[in-house]
Image 1 (cartoon, rainbow, N blue to C red):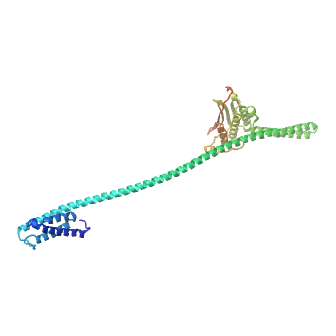
Image 2 (image 1 turned 90 degrees about the vertical axis):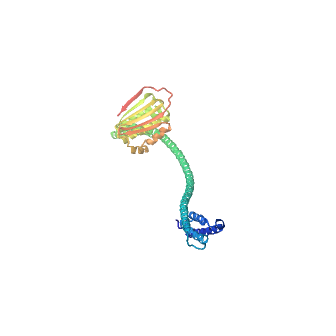
Length: 404
């Protein structure tokens, strides 16, 4: 039995006993000398259901004493005189015990039911609270997601703007690079022309003056020897100027086209470097647009320069072909190849007369072509492919030569 509200429960039980006695007094004219304990039974049943078995027992005892004292003959006495009274008392307590047992059982069931209801109600309340918290957390998460999405959208827009800006900048840099290389070619052409027209003519004039002095001082062996030495120096200077001028911008490139210029350059490269070089050029390749020929020649020039400086090769092969409206320049060597970690660095370097792999690639891409570099233990291959439309028919004959 639960121990809370003890005084209240006993108060209710005793009050119920008093009410039962009073009710029996009110019903005494009707009931007379029978059913003495009927009101007490009702009070006991009520207390058993509401207050518990102990208060119900107290209610039964109090009610029994009140009824037995005031209504059982002889009245105002609690003595038992006849067996009938003993039987009546015994029946009273049996009925009360039964009522108390049934009431306590029902009360306990009701208490368990109440506890179950309270537990379910509490669980429902907790579930509602949890759902409310979950809903609040979900709304907070949605707000955070929306905020983060907005931030990511802003960041993405900034990144896209930066990418677009970078692409525009790279395109401008590429155009600037191509422009600078074009200006470099123009400057090389001008320097080559100036060397040929000024320094070359000056040295030729010196040789003419030397020849005149030689004729005038033919009877002086000492002066003749000095003039011969001076003439040799002039010849050497003329040769150096002519070679430098041709390397800067070969006249053959403008006069005869890429085929003749490539043939001349490869032969000169073989003589200067000591590397056995073979050149295979389609004889019917004809003339190409000026910018195409210049790009092909610069790619050839840079490729062979790299072969001489970096590859350690003993042989090189140059092929210039025309297939399906495309001009293909291939430079192959049997050198050590370019290590993977050095290929990028080499492609970003412009040394000497060359423009570097990046410069070659930019020039080729500017004309809508492709530049491919393959390197391994067996050597390096550089392919430059340019799309070209020719008006004249392509001949099937080709010229092949080698130089050492």
